Length: 79
Image 1 (cartoon, rainbow, N blue to C red):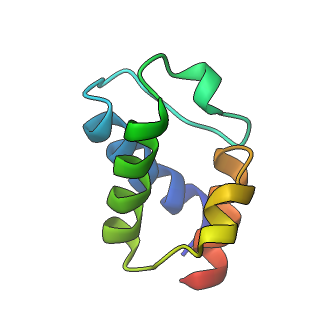
Image 2 (cartoon, rainbow, N blue to C red):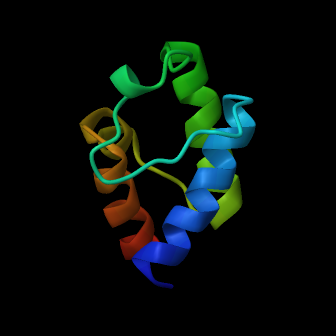
């Protein structure tokens, strides 16, 4: 799976979780960039990403993610 394919699927997940069709994420996207992205929505997002890609993030991975690019790196490693 390519990085571009991951982003295509992630954009759909973000749009669904945050109910906003205009969201487009990139390597530098953080919670500060999406108004509705709070701690509760973060949990929903992680669960939705895990379901979409058939992976499980470790607690250390979740806590260590500083932006969407790091999430993509982990997805690519686990896929």
